[in-house]
Length: 161
Image (tube, rainbow, N blue to C red; front, side, top):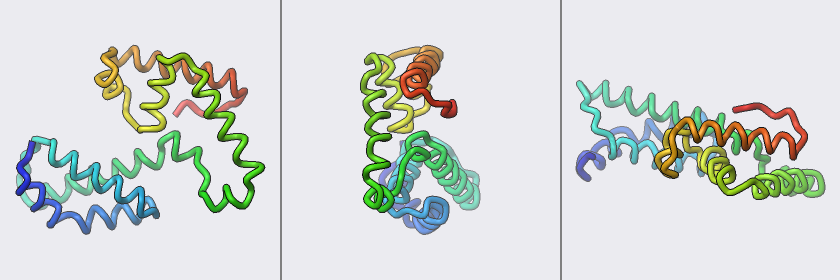
């Protein structure tokens, strides 16, 4: 874990780069702020020793790009509709989301927890395992079974991602 001075210094050196990368990738100020905080939190908690200033900057760029990529490919993000579109056509968009939410809430608790943590909070299976005190393979099994139950309930051919 890094000291407050180290984190403050890194924010001073790399904040503009991280913020610009996020804005370019995400095109959204709110998501940019989330990723910005996550990147610097990851830095504060990491114990990586950097060989040079360039190595540190490269680490920030790579972590930022990976975090943006993870957010963009997340299940929740790929299944959302901008609020403007939702307001323009409320009778068409609202029932689908309500139906999916009802299907998720109807899952047994053990499936509901892993689905929520994975798709809505964006946690990877190893972290879910740590959070819930379960083996990583158990988490993968629960996710697979939950997807199958949702697919049967919703009757769709949505992807496994």
